[in-house]
Image 1 (cartoon, rainbow, N blue to C red):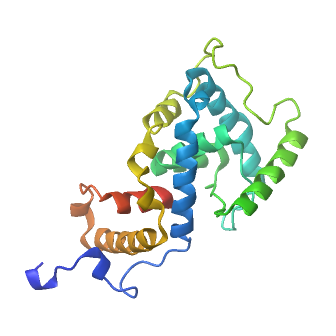
Image 2 (tube, rainbow, N blue to C red; image 1 turned 90 degrees about the horizontal axis):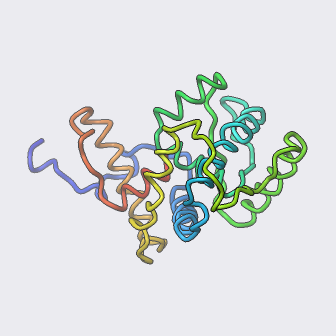
Length: 222
């Protein structure tokens, strides 16, 4: 590129960038709040708790959401318990591994519902609990493992490592200004420019490390 064609990501127009089907501004604000809750929950970082959460995710939640999901349709409005949602969040941050997992186990991709406000979140959680109790009556809805209990056998080491890798993710986004609306709107536009750049210039961009605001949007989009 010549110097006359170089522009900042925020200068690329809406018509030039990629269309996003999800409200990333609202989604990013919710994600920051969710990551804060995870970061502050010491119980969730205990090895026994994580292993149990992964088991619940693998044996209960994913079969449940798979049965409710129709490929190509909007994901159902249900949210799993907090510990399972954390495992799900970490799993989807590895899109290649998550895609392979879904195709291998369920022969389809399983998407996430677009739930970005407290009212919809409460409804989705209550609906999940009703279905969970009905279909898996022997499985408690909440993770009841004791934090000081003996560690059960680890059945999915890769997923455990994913969860461990991201347990301090909130520390990247802890500054209060990162949740401000004006910042997130600008970040979304810069992220769209980033996607445009990746699409236009191909493999040469895949070694780039995105700026913090773009990283927030990327993790949210994943």
